[in-house]
Image (tube, rainbow over all chains, first blue to last red; front, side, top):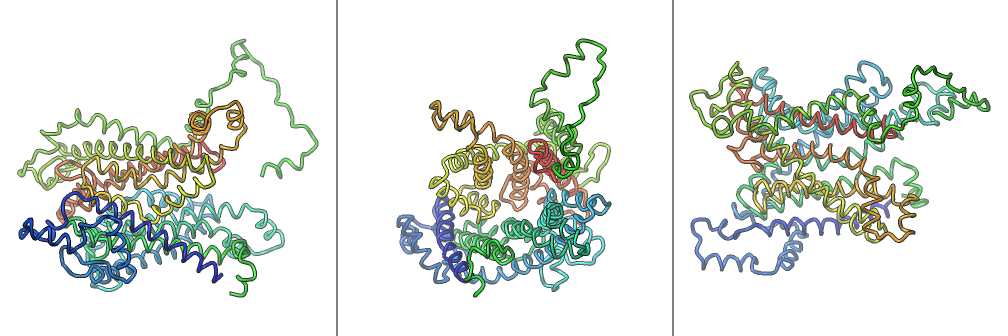
Length: 315
Length: 315
């Protein structure tokens, strides 16, 4: 198991390197000159040329990239064009807010989505099950930024129960952003759990378990669930990317100073180092979450664990 | 399932259907007439009521989008500012009310449909083109070609599609063409995967082998024998991804990086209406509903097509 983890971690390095290169290359194609943005009204030909040399913008792309990556590996994300402060300082402040929203959304979705999916699958023709299907379909079709606005209208403006923006009121202020961000995610988790659970209870080993007299609860939770959860775990991991994309929208709706907001502000101000930093951090999160899913796979599925044989047992 | 249900009657030949009385010769021959595959699929599709509902809703939206210039004049109604009529609630003359600049919301939604559908559909054609080439090559040739292309796609998949689109827009600006390219490219890794899987499932069939044995070249085999046989899953994905693309356009416009006002687009209508929604909630209801129903219709249609074209997957 330890060897598997190490191998997967090593495989992550080229992915991150190529990814940063792609983002770096795309952003370096920005028409216009970065020095005009930095200098603003103070811009002169001479100053611009001097600054360009200073920032290394006169060098070839590959050299610039190499310079960026070597600094990145030391935790240096470069200096923001606009605030002239290290990008890392801004990122670390903003990242905490984003992490809170994402974590609470995930917690909410997983803890509600899986049980609802299971219940819905065990009674496939019930009113409850039909209801969850309708809800699931609505969930995947709902534009989350609109949902956020509607939730603000209902719970902040009309009822006055929850704050409509910021994160200053503790857990209370996290609730609406978490629901907004997680809505599609939860619908997906629920639908996947439901369909894979319905698939699992049709298998032969379930019939065997029932035949030997295992209680219905035992059949569902001890025999079917382990097999049914694999696709759900895939969705939980795969959709982290979508969730991070949704962060940009959720933070805009609720005016939360997070990484998503920072990214949009940086794009509007054409602050390339900051854009790059945000994208690299988000991509890193997705890559790591994919890795975690694979590890959970290996942990849950004995067939994968068996590939690592004795090592797995000793680890 | 079938195997177990017929097992009890094993041995006995299936009972022949009772002979039917035919009144006319025409009716007698009609039973041997083969229905075309398309006709049969269409009949199967019509049985799926939710899918038909999706098709109807989407057709209505598409017709409205195409006929938008005749429904409301662009210069005289859609973009004309009339401060005296601003923020009116829904009434007989303005079914969905007016926005903060006195423009009829319904007219703007109708024209917004045109923008969304046009960009959404063309963007998906871009990703389809990329996906067919890359996924087709990866699936057909396998081996090294496959692993190189798919590793590259895996890297792209680490970056959520909204963020990849944001990076491209950050670099090149947000014209309509750039939006199409950005969204098209950001969805193409997923398309490549779908096409690859579909191609791999048919490339070892006998007719492909037969074509190869009579000396057909690769490009001919791919274009004439392989791709036509994996059109089903591709059509399903096209439908579902057009929904995603429309959602992405609305999302990008909502955060101010997509279609810019005064051009009407559902996302930017929500963004500009946000400021006034506390006192005039009607301003954010209609554009959101437009997005919701479009996405819902496409999801229903996509799910229905999947059930029709690949009944094995049906749960």
